[in-house]
Image (cartoon, rainbow, N blue to C red; front, top):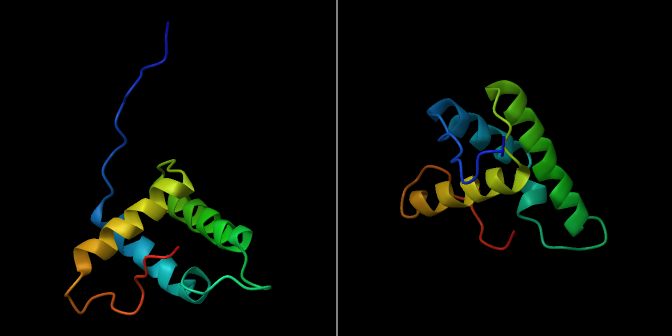
Amino acid sequence: MEPEKGKRAANFTDAEKVFLTELVERNINIINAQFNSSITKQRKKQVWEDIAKQLNARSGAQRPANQIKEKWRELCRSKVGGSKGQGTCKDDW
């Protein structure tokens, strides 16, 4: 049998979105920091991998870090103009 192609991932639940927000806020200084000798691309990638691991452990889903990072960007775009999350969303990560 061939593996299923194009199967869509499950939507993020409200609980996952809340937990994702909490995880990002704990690491916001690294996520939003400019690259320098101590904040490297690899360091930021590792932070997103850690967030993915924690989110997946709690939710039971197996989402890759890049999917979780993209969801965070989507949540930020939906918050534009609102007070929730101000100061945590930035486009250059």
